[in-house]
Structure formats: structure tokens, C-alpha cells
Amino acid sequence: MPHSVDLITTIAAALGLALIFGFVAVRLKLPALIGYLLAGIVLGPYTPGFVADTALAGQLAEIGVMLLMFGVGLHFSLDDLLSVKKIALPGAVVQIAVATAMGMGLAHWWGWDLMAGVVFGLSLSVASTVVLLKALESRGVLATPNGRIAVGWLVVEDLVMVLVLVLLPPLAATLGSAAGATDVSSLLTTLAITLGQVALFIVLMLVVGRRVFPWLLWQVARTGSRELFTLCVVAAALGIAYGSSAVFGVSFAVVAFFAGMVLRESALSYRAAEESLPLRDAFAVLFFVSVGMLFDPNVLLEQPLQVLAVVAIIVFGKSLAAFLLVLAFRYPLNTALTVSASLAQIGEFSFILAGLGMALGVLPVEGHSLILAGALISIALNPLLFQAVEPAQAWIRSYSALARKLEHPDDPLSELPADVASHTLSGHVVLVGYGRVGQRIAETLDARGVPYVVAEQQREAVEKLRRRGIHAVVGDAFEPAVLIQAHVARAQMLVIATPDAFKARKMIEIARTLNPRIHIVVRSHSEDEADLLRREHAVEVRVGERELADSMVRHVGEHIEIQMRAKEAAQETAPSHS
Image 1: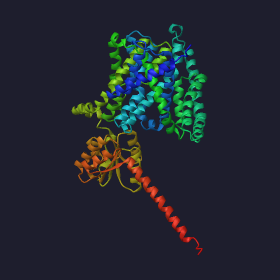
Image 2: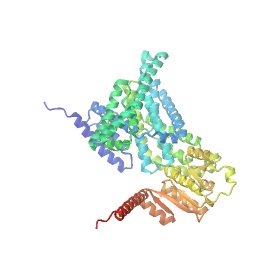
Image 3: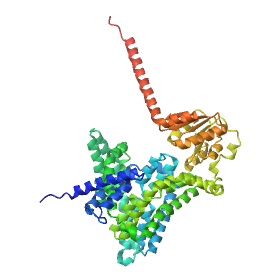
């Protein structure tokens, strides 16, 4: 009797079709994730032709979930989150609550019970980390203030979903018992036990894991074997996830996330993320394919109005809530539009949560199909929404009264204090951007006693600078009002420390209009972009990689020169044997 090849067949078919559909999606300027989901639909039981083994695909998907969440944990930076905590933390929590309420209302209208509505609403409230990071990176705005706010917002969403994944099983078991007759004391006891188990797991991971796993990585790295290092990373991710899930009863996804967070403490975390990336990507593809296999395309024909309602909540409902929240925190219109476009889709956490809801018997199959349909359509529309950010911004600002109302020109941080503005601030430096590069420049200016004004989009950074007695204004220097408030007309130099070349051009034009003699220094990531800026605007441009190379060349040259001088001195002082 020939041995079974179901596993090989499932993997080969899933990866092969995912490659084909993913390639087609990318050529159509869509995220590859759309292609992976379509490949799963083709392999699923709801479409004609070959049907893959759904049980095996489900187990492969579990591995994909573990590695995916492990990768999220590896990239989770507490510092990045803290830098935007004042907007990301309350904004994400309120936006999740609003989107969940909308989803629950829709589910109640359809006659679903409370738990089904909760799972359905939560699934519609959280955006895809994979889609967001790729969208921001492809547009070159990942490292900008807008990008950091969007990523920080999503990190908070992910943390909330991690907590939901922990609490959902006991909640479903308690609320679903006795035909819905809920014993409050039993519910609280179950939640207390669950949270206690999770707390014990987190303490062990933070106290023991932070010492053991980084140490283990170092020991393996010292062998010099790349394959052993990769094996150590993957074994740690899967082993910790499986073992902790068995002992503490925590889901694979949650454990893998914390495992990644612990390994991030190691100095080798970057290498760990790099080495495990191919395997994580491969199994993540299998995860999305397996999700597509569960989708019934007939829902698009049988329930088109329900699908449209779901898409409306994802693309318009929660995005509008995020848009208004960002404006309420007095951030620029561009930031509000960027964040709302970033959140106008759902992805991996929605699939994980919907799958868990089905496994617990609280979410109907219909709900799972609607969530998948909403994900497919919203991810496909997301690139178009990003492209609409600039036109939407221009359209809103064309109505000057509305634009003034939305962008809060009376914001006290948008202009220098009266006592500063009353003095003749001249001969100073206007520094645009207070990230890592901007902070180093500011330190140099402080050391040399050169006065400067910082223009920065992050309100938290401006508040800190003002508390330290440093002149700073909040806003996007792309707007003339911001540079005017920074008194660029009387400045000796404009330093643009942000990497956005498109906005840099506009800043240069504004500065030269107000101050034709101002000296301008611009940061760039590209040699081609740097050459173009020099030719068009006659400005000084610094390219990151070139500056790093020049610095290393100078160091190497100085070191060799010192060694040669030492050698010559030793030869001159050596006693003669003639």
C-alpha cells in the first residue's frame, strides 16, 4: 500500500497556487495577501476542482499563526509605542470600541446572540499589521511621524487582541452555559483563574525567559553555524508556544507573541528576525491560504447587502472614527487621513479571532464568511485609499472654513509663545523633524550655543522640548504656516531632517520665498534623489549610506595613519646594531 502524500500535496498545491495568484495580485498593484486568499478559495471545498486537505491545512495554519505572532513580538518596540502613547493608546481603544459596537449592532439586527456580536465586532475592529507595514514601507512613510503613529496605533490594537484571545475561551464557556443563564461569580472566578495563569506565564517569561533564551541564542551563535541559529530561533518559537499552551492553557498565538518579545531583549534579535523571516513568510502564506479555504464565495451572491454593510464598517465606519479621534487630539489633517487610511482594512488577527470564535461555537459560519469577504474587499481597496489621501486633503482644504475648524489653528503648540515671538529671533536654525537624526543635530547646536527652532509633527515631542525651554512648534512643515511660525524668514539655516523628499521640495520652496538667502541642508536616502535636489534647488544634501561610508573611511584612514606613525617612531627609537 503506497504511503500517504496528503501533506506534500497540500503544501505543494498551496504554495504553488499562492505564488501564481500572489504574482498576479502584485502585478495588479494589489497586496500579495489577496492572491494568497484567492489561492485558498480555489483549493477550498466551495469551488470546483482539486480540494486540499482542510485538516492538514488547519494544522499548517497553526504553525503559521505561531511564527507570524512570533515575528510581531520580535518587532514590538516599547519605545516606539511610548513615543506616540498619548494618541495611539486612547485612540486605538476608543476606535476598537466604536467599531465593535457597530459590528454588534449589525449582528443584533441580523438576529445573532451577544457573544456572536462581540466576536464579529472585534474581528472588524483590528487592522492587518502585514498590510499596514507593507503599505507604509512602499510609500516611504514608515519612519515618518505619521507612520509611527499608525504603527503605534496598530501595536495597541494587537495588544488588545492578544488580551481578547486570552479572555474569549473562558467568556464563551461561561456565557454559553445553561442556555445563556450566566452566573456572575462563576464568570469572575473563571476570568480570575485565566488571568492568573497568564500572569504567571508572563512573569516566568519576563524573569526567566529574558535571561535563558537570549543566553541560549548567544551560545548557539558562537558555534558559527547559521543553520543551528535558525533552528534555535524556530525551535524556541514553536517549543515555547506548544509547551506554554499545554501548561498554562494560553493560545499558541499569545505565547508566540510573548516569546518574540522576550527574544527581542537579546542583542541578536535583529539577526533572529532576519534568519527566521523566510520560514515565517512561507508558513504565513500557508496560514492565509488555509483562511481562504474556509471562505464560501456564494456569500457574495447570496448576501450582497450584508457584505456591503461589513465593508462599510471596515472602510468607512472605523476609519471615520479614527479620523475624528486624530483631529480631536489636534494633529494635522494629513496625519488624520493617513491613520484612517491605514486602518481601513482587516487581516490576520481578524482571521485568528474569527477562527477561534468558530472553534468555540460562538460565531456562525455565515459570520466567518462575511469577515473573510470584508477582509478581501478592504485589502483590495486599501491602496486606492492611500492614493486618495492627498486629493482628499486638498479637497477638504479647499473649503477654508472647514479646514480651519478641523486643523485647530488656535492650538497653543502651533505657534511660539508670545514672549518668544515678541523678541527678534534671527540668525537661528530651523530644524524640521526631531527623530534620531534631528536629536543628534539639536545636541550639536546646543553644545555650540546656536539658537534653533524645532518644527515637529509629534505633539509629545514638542511638549517635552518646551518643558526643557527649547523653542518648538507642532505641525507639518509642508504647510507654510508652520515655517512662518518658526521664523524661517529670519533664520540663517533650514535643516530638513525628515526623509520625505516630496515634502522637502515644498519646504525648500516656502523657505526660499520667505528668505532667499537661507542656507538649506536636506536629508535623503537616495543618491538619485540627492542629485535631483542639488540640481533643482542648489541645496546641500546628505545621503545616509554615503555619510556612513565616508565616516568609516575616515576612521580607517586615521587608524592606519596612527599605526604607521607608531611603527616609524618605533623604528627611529630602536637601538642600532651596526
